[in-house]
Image (tube, rainbow, N blue to C red; front, side, top):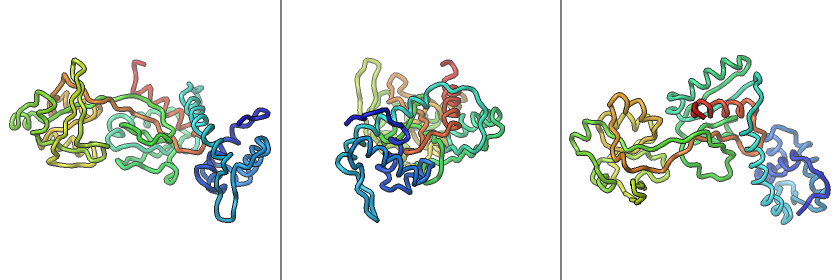
Length: 302
């Protein structure tokens, strides 16, 4: 499928929004335009390609075969173009209006809230709302401009940019290790009181890589289960068990001796810190600028 003359990326953006949402009115609301503009964009594309892209009834809008072909070819490319634009250095400017950011409670208290405070000082006309929750927020339904998420993104349709990385450490309180012993090999964890973080994809299965490249997969036994990283850290510091915790959360308790790292010669998979933007609409310039700012906070040497 090819275009006879240069085309407007906004028309493709309108087409992708309708294809994903299944309606002209909902697509217009999501990308911040009018239903009439969406209709003109689709009509222009259909005229240019000389094919019908949608079948329209009073109750439903569905892709035709040609529409499905176009969507398969252009949707991922359009996202890549938008993400590339999101990663380009932005000219220094002052933003106004509003910016809604969501993230986990732990990340907000560790570094994100401080970054928001400094960014707000640089842009005094910008109203920023920072919402913290350990649940996965629906960005479109809740009107969020930017989510900062940690871990391993499982939804390939998300428009996400990696801002930084974190390590995972197996840690426990000195009091627990004095009582239960210190594991020397990953297999030793099977006999320990593991505390499971339930929001992880596989909270009881852990894959280690040794100093010589050898691999070990361990299935642990959870004595306690918890759904937030902050609660997990408190349980660990109280001597309730042993667990893997991200390096952002362990830095301060390791420094003060409240937690102790074990299996230091073995590593767990590295995780990512991501800026995630709502699908199907323009990336807010202030959201893009803050994500770039927070990347510099996370990587001061870079």
